[in-house]
Image (cartoon, rainbow, N blue to C red; front, top):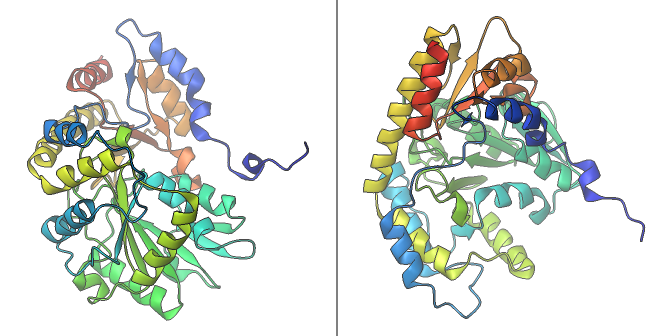
Length: 368
């Protein structure tokens, strides 16, 4: 059978390039300190595990729209933690199978394709570009979408940003919302680190002071992967413009894109509880302080990094891959900033998602 492989139009999977550096770091006598991918290492909260177990007898198909309990818990969380009121749990929110899935498929699900333009941040999580490529649309990296001259279908924002940790201000978000509505652009705000602001407080694009109380032309994307250590559960949601949510629901029904019922029970429990998130924040604050102090003392510059789960670091002696190699010599694996766009070619992303013991080991090695 002859066919044109879909993978041929996607960018290279960047993590494959880290293999030799990972091998080098793993050869350290005290083992590797892997601060590259940013996968959670701390326990799943007990209340979430209990909710999952209690819902395990789930023989029937789930619905694409999700359970009323999961949707209401997410709506309540938006109002309680992000000061976003007014999301209708029936028509304004949809659970998704992890937000990477949603971002990757969003252009395709909305019928965006060849000849359409998707704007992505100039420092960006690679899935924005890959999702546009899957749909055969053109992705354009921009520092500020409002300065782009030309027709646009979708523009992505990400705050706190992966990889740099930059937080977009309410004023900047308001300007982007006004631009999106004036140009009939769907503005998609990836807010998966919304509860992890360090130097300033992240603001949702759905906040009334940003959107004026209307969700027209807006989607916000949220995940439980980092706030609740549920990356392995694949659980998140998208909320905002009800016409867009309805279209996503209609197409996703045909594709059978449904969050499993036990996972939705876990989602409801996680979104209803703030204590475990505050405890996780404290862990990350400690690790951030340890790594930031150690890197700075070793001659590294930390820039941006106002929120999220990463430090954005550079060293005057190295480019991105030179920095990765230098740290791998000390048994520390990080991600090259070049993974995230040309603006990151002299930086590395250092994840806070190592255990306390591994983070302390990294700090010790940086002091040696």
